[in-house]
Length: 453
Image (tube, rainbow, N blue to C red):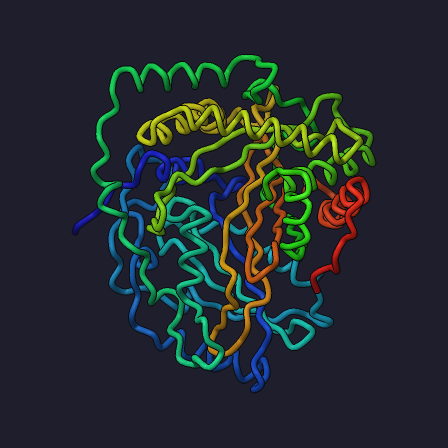
């Protein structure tokens, strides 16, 4: 039996798995049904999927030991997958609106994965109003990050509407890791010392750099339960880019500003807004150009989201200053040292969770805000057009809500996942994003565009 060990970063997601903090990520894809209609299309899709005998890496990988209690988890190839378990069909109750879809996805995302089986699940969902259907795909975080997970799903779609024979997602293998990444040079002593110095900065107080001591206490950072809530929002990408161009900031800065505005209103409504700004952990891809291999290759930067700033324009510029300083901090490192730096800076939070102390004391950061780049082209599944792809991330003890974005064909799709007990009325966070964008556009004197359907 040929097995392959997971990297330290990938292994951490196995070791952190608990019934209250399952370590899986997911995507909800919403499709416009082709002319034949939803019922016959979904029936044929399920029949063909269950007949398919081909399966490739990482879809065919299982853990050698299906337990979190292991220091060096390894994967092995499964030659007899139980596709009846991994591919399922569910129907929404009438009227099959966004509320019902969100409730179903919340239930699916609350259920831990069986670590003895393949590390993915796929659920086809019909009964959605407007002649649409959805597909929810769940991956364990140990085998994908945002970039590699999105790549696996896009590989299972076509650029052409008339392509009616696209095989299921699991037939399409992830690319191998580029050779240049397999032969990284060993860091010098100077690089190692410089990295250690940068890591130490993250545990101190700094006027310009957002560190692991910058986050205030908030209701979002206590102990969490096992159940989740899920909400979505979508924006025309050009509308957000117009704001970014107008002020000379990045798209990610605009997204963080909207998140900050939404959280500010939410926390004010429950009389729990801290005097200091909430801080966000922002994943940053450490992949080489073109690297879509499976596994995790992310670093982490930290930034304010300006929840303590009422003026949305001032908030945007303060966020830009914070993210710029954070990027400078990690870009000072050589490429070889960015993964060790990220592991070292995240180690205290990981150790706190492993010890069972997550969600106690002052948080190291308050939320996660992630943006996974997508493509500009329309995508199709056997003639069915992909309308939206909403990511669903992880939450864990000490961090009850996460915002994740994915851009597709001119639309920025936002998926919000949260602990059901810690974040009641979470739909307000989704509508709050829209309100925050309108306030920002008004503050800049920009005429907003139309909403996404």
